[in-house]
Length: 322
Image (tube, rainbow, N blue to C red; front, side, top):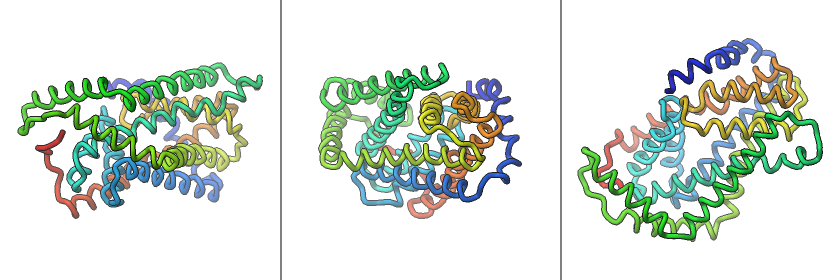
């Protein structure tokens, strides 16, 4: 499926990559600012994960987070595989397995809710009667609908036990049927409820930190896109670029290609054109943005995995997982 998708998306991906000579024409200070924003965006994401994991270890969180991101960016179905690697690395560093699983889940839900909320901030431009492409309008409507669905799901998970107990029972049954799972899982649902209560209690005390960190994670990533657009000499409309960015971010959540490779390049460059960015500037800005948000973090993830193995040794199949 990933191979077929990459084949279909190859022309758009090739068009973006072939614009690399124009990277030398970008304004260096804007490009440097974009890279700095992207680096700070990843720091916010890792700090959020550290907050929900309730751990003081930066080394374990940073190495597991970047290594898991690298796996997500390189393997088909990478979201699931990356989360698995990240979970095993956190467990291997001494973090409780249920605590690691619930922390990753909470961090993921908060991140997705933040992405879906982005179009809401651009809706005043649409409602105000500004000239907006129909494609961007539909992206805003999709984002608003997704935001309310994610919020509803989060409310159910945080306030009721029955849904979480059912999820725990289903996962426990699957785990116990796996041939290499040596230790039988028991009371997973109850343990998830207890961990949910602990996370909810901690977030209740630190909710403002979570809001600031997820805002920093997404906002700085968006500012990085604005910066590379300015580096091309374009004068982007921040609200229209926000709609293009949010629509692309939502599409990237689909586990079609590793890290949205090809899908993000094709969709972002096209949506930036709808946001009144000249075609050539949209293409080279997309390439520069992906260098900071996809390629450099992927390389850093490989380095982090090596550093992790030096301290904790190779990953082992967790026998007491869940």
